[in-house]
Image (cartoon, rainbow, N blue to C red; front, side, top):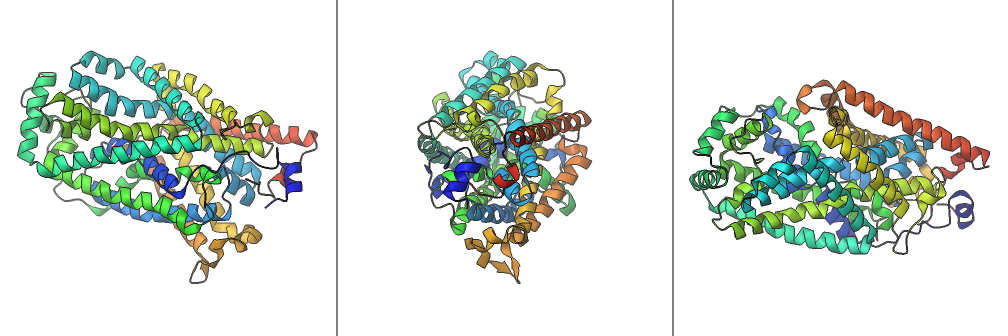
Length: 529
């Protein structure tokens, strides 16, 4: 850790100005929202029919339990260096400033601009459209299914997330808790509805509501025909493994709050960090498996796959995306009760929305605190909000969202958004694996140094296992069309983003050298919180 004198010379100031406004429980809730079963989970599960021979339930369980290695890796890094900026701080101190800057800035700053319209699309299909259909406002749903509606929803996401973050960590935690606990009520209600009704009950309810809302007769049977009712009765193991790179679009993010741990009380406690990330991961995995089993029992597995398959093929019998929350609401005859269920489940979106910017602001802030970006970027408000960093997330997201919604090719360019973040995580896995040898002074003084596996540091074992998992996913994403991201134009676009980060780092390093500041010395120290 830097001495106060050194900190004053090397960094923008002696302390970051951020506040420890979160408890470990707050970090747990944030992790649970980051691997959001309702928003990300249900959305990603709808692509599972693209690999029909695989077992979605088994893929969720295998990936969820294996990713405990990720939780151990990040819990270890946090315990060693519980600082705002997470991946950037660790990679720059262990692997070098240039590597840390390029991977973190691209994976946490540039690429999260492109996630705003992705969040907006989920808002539209899981909240706006279901509410509109229940109210009979089909025209509203049609608008939000188009380019104008996607851009409008993107602006809502950007503004809503920014307002939440600007309130400060303590207020954010209160809002997050409300959304989490009330959202759990909605999730429990949906699961109970699925548990107490039979498949015959659902067939009747679905046919009735499809006719009333959309004028479609015999919708259940027509959905089976439109989506292909002949799905394999038994799953094969290798296709199940191939489903895992699909599933991790949903459950790879239990470490999303790692950049915030400079503001979490007790972050140096390794076991508490495991509880926050690993606990969220395991609990979400178990509930996901239960939910999918209930889908198979009540909706019918062939129907669930057929409905999603038909929708993505543009041949859906009803215009609505087959959102399980809306399907479960069909058991209610009262529109008020239908809206109640969809509304309760919508809190999973509103509690998750802030994650599109919050974690990234700390990475942007940390680069400025290290004197790489200009000093203004490290400014914080009285309640500890790095407001300039927040603006650097918010402002660029507006034109990005516009081009995503209205551009003919731009959305295609952004297909590799997940790949970029996974590459950043791979950088941290490598940093964690070599930590005991690259920075023995920091490692030996940390609480994780006493944990070993057959004499090998636990952090190294976990990091290597996590890196193997990431490399498997990256290879599959790049080599197979089924995941929808190995697009040449997207690779070129992302290469440009990496190029901008590299040029930016070189330029800022030269500027700082001319000012008499040696960034190599900065990266040799850890900032005070």
